[in-house]
Length: 191
Image (cartoon, rainbow, N blue to C red):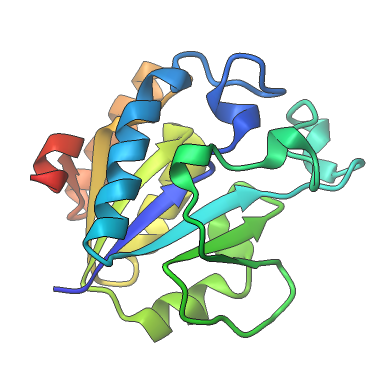
């Protein structure tokens, strides 16, 4: 079974309290993020990471306060989620190589708005996605339903995601499992 680890927006501005748009409690999942990244690397599983990459006057800043401006410290991925060999795919159409981690930049909540993501997933042809990151009811949700649409098995790692609203996360879990998704934990994936 070909497995891809799918890491959503594990960036400094979201994960740590000093971040521009910090998700309360997200720093508590860093240990599991590291375990998942190391497991994927050790077992030669491809990692696809998404990352916000906004301009200074990005239209999204009318909804959310400025965050993850391209080239800033806050836009960087957490060190524990970054492999030494990686490639970044901007929103411009481009070729992708064969590296252990591909970072898909985006300017909107939904990672599938990057025109490179769907062709990349089709090319990689995974049977299973292991999904984690922030924020559960926003970017993780978009990724979850987009990945389910590929027809592959999608496992959402409940102790490697963080929410802003527990009720919204509960609704995500219900809809996700009703559509065939699986809720699991880091320990179940790495053992």
